[in-house]
Image 1 (cartoon, rainbow, N blue to C red):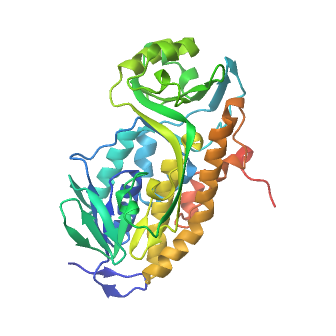
Image 2 (cartoon, rainbow, N blue to C red; image 1 turned 180 degrees about the vertical axis):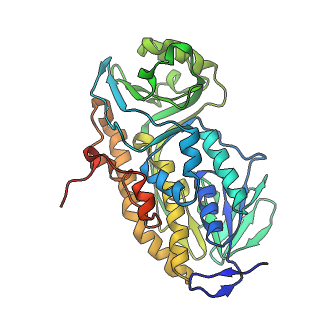
Image 3 (cartoon, rainbow, N blue to C red; image 1 turned 90 degrees about the vertical axis):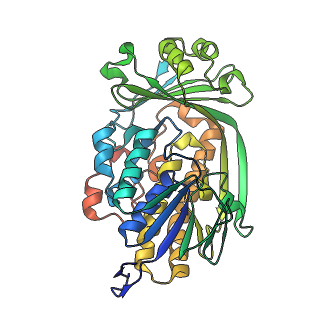
Length: 394
């Protein structure tokens, strides 16, 4: 095995990481560690490397994380910048928000492919058909076939239902479910939705007789991401494939694209949930992404926070030779921001405050405006924050 410089500048054998899960958090962590000189192997339980989602908004915090690992230029080239965020309640359109804010919309499969390319370029070993089922604090990742893989650090990036996390009873979970769920679909963008007036995020709501929402995001000239929220007891509005009749009755002006959503393949429905875990590590095992902090999608920050924490983990590990110290410093730095994002997302889901429009206050934007310790002044200068979303001076 080749040698590399350690955090203190001495030459030593590279530290090795085994990563469970090749989602956004797992790939981001793998890239960041590999770029810091680690050898990294990622285990994906599926037979192919692909994302099963539809679309995603990458907020400023995520773009800074992706800038640090060299991925942001491709996001900018292949994603789109919404010109504003508009909210409509029962047909009444509120004043658009977030004009000029540095965030990008992109399809999840495209983002995943970009991260896979970057991981390979960084020398990450990507293994498919390899399911992690447990981990041991000594730094052992256990696979379904009985293999036991020793590492300096094991990263559990295997999602909200993490088997690796669940194998460690010392990682205490506080899980809560909510009344809503969301169907996520990616649809072809038809001619009648090609105008500039659609090149924005439009958040459609209707609250009577029950809450239904369509988050409409153009992800390029050919595709639209639709996040279709309803209460989970509204069974027709919670099914995949989409039931066009129930959705078109509430959003008749979107009927043409709802019909396309009903024909779309690859959609999924997820109930809203929060899972707060404490601590985030046990010995040489660490949780990153939804395994550590699954949150309601009301704030749209689940994936972004996961990628931020992944990059910050690699950064802190480069600052400290002692692993235990590094993990403690990392959690101390990231915990308040992450807990606040979870709590704010839960509050917004329970109260549906975004339905009333003009909800992106400086307080709400604190997560998106979080500045990574790993980001340089040059990185920060690429993503200026409009004054309307900056926090008030203390």
